Image 1 (cartoon, rainbow, N blue to C red):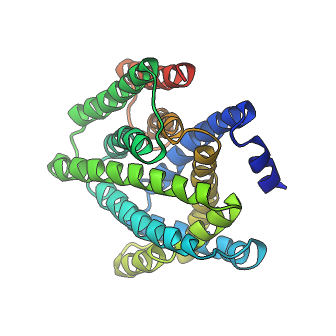
Image 2: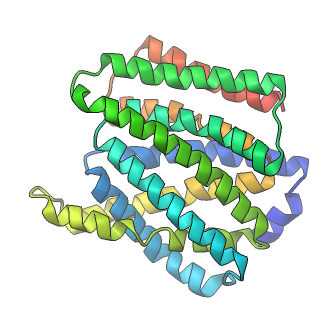
Length: 301
């Protein structure tokens, strides 16, 4: 069983390798997940459809296939519900005001710095000087990419300042949920119990919010098409969030948080290939800087 495999490699060299792979897989999937919320479908409706399908898919697993939470586990899950609601609210507000290639890098660049500090305070994790250099390189690339995109965007500039403030605040929430979820999955004997109930309980909020936005939209999409996108987004979300939370159980929370932020590279590529946002040599160089920072963090551990 997967649970037995996770428990067997936890705290081993094999666990560290698996955590690295999981964090990088999460990075790719999270970039796709973010693009779904900033594509042709309004972000409120997109997130509502995704959460509706996550709720539908996770319900039978949580209710019938894994053990139910016990005692303090309910408290951890209740905290996750509040934190993730605020995170989703911040993302929707930021995406509704700013371009994807500006908002996304700021959120993801702010998150790992706070997450590393949180992992030090709560789990006693420390980084070497080489790893801190890697963090600095990665953050320079991420914020450089956001600044470059900001300087070149013309449409919607009047709403970019509030979008950037929302992105920074949401980045802080990323760090909070990364640390909180790591605490939850480490304290739960069966990691898949935490994951199943996490997805189930944190997905009740946005389906209603998204539906209300859909009802008021004069150009609303057919519900079937919206839920089709939601199904793809739910599968992507399971892979993205599930992978990084498992990675934080198998290895250091801070390293998983930093490696996941290579999602900014994937996001820039998606913005170019799918959303038709321009990518030139400067952006490519900044993306390479982000990747180099992640490599330094991993090699310096």
